[in-house]
View: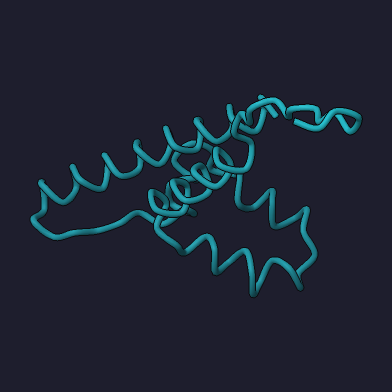
Amino acid sequence: MLLGRIVGWLLLALAMLALGGDGLRWLESGLPHLISLRDFWTHFDPNGPALLQSLLPPVIWDPAIVTILTWPAGITLGILGVALLILFRKRPPRRRQRFGALA
């Protein structure tokens, strides 16, 4: 569960990085532009999307993954990061109930 929280925080950090870059581009050009997940990914690893495409069957790649890769990177990574943090949050320990004693 710790790994899920770490990945969630890393995704949130990447989302902030993407949104920061979008904000800087907006200040430079005066026009809002959100970088797509594919473009953001290729900044870090130019062969990443092509490698993923070679690993997945075409039925999954074309309708699903191609659509997701066109979504804005900051928003997509942020939502995924928050979802992982909620899913893998620390929960309080469960209290054991005694069945023999009535309070």
